[in-house]
Image (cartoon, rainbow, N blue to C red; front, top):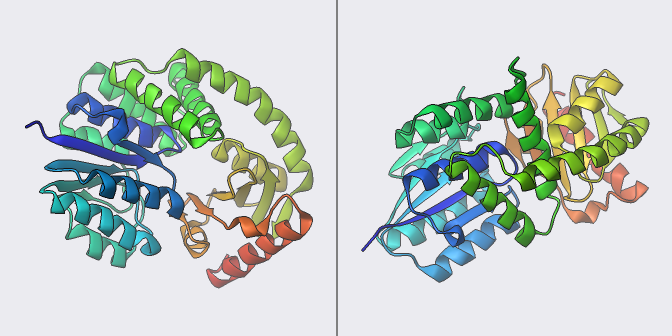
Length: 323
């Protein structure tokens, strides 16, 4: 019987989608066995429920471009237990910072795990581990690296691809989950076929870029300042890095936090400061200069009172971590 392959990856950027595309180059994976998720507890628990219901036999589970926050360790371990109970194995390819607790508890349950802050993006790790190369793969991996580490290559075509991926995928993730999931999987399929993009993503990026410019102009007119380093902007959905860039540029602050009121998510970027501890304290995580967190809808950031409560929470945690 053919071995079943299951993939869980990050839905928010080209690095997570790229991992799935490379896995599909190597293995026959059904779309129903691909789970593209964000860092919310609800998304992870939905995957846990689906995998438990399926009770896969002799399956190989790949988890990519996702770290485990301490509060999500039990859910990830539950998923891993279900896979291994059916005679399967688990491989995890990630490049985000992990806590010592998460590393210790999860590493021993995986047949192969690469985790922790490193100079490779998850797509690079996946390509290396699967021993995939060739002209398309090598060029695509370079694009993913530049995109994930917010680099600005001189190659105009590469910069155009990075922008299209960032804005198009951000727009996809503003849609109902069933719609965005379908569109992201179609993008992964195009990449698997050796195409850098598809018409739908290009059209989506152009449309959302026009919307974003207007939202950014409105957002930066009313920024909130915290301490000496942090500026916070509130808006409907935007591409996170671009939004934070404009917040930092307008405010002159080192740290920009974009509060996505549609998704109840905070995106944090910095030029100098290590903002991972702040994002972690707020229930999220990420890289030293690019992190994020989810917050409860009880803050209701569409109201002034809700925004003030969230700002007070950010201020409190920033002080605790020395920012």
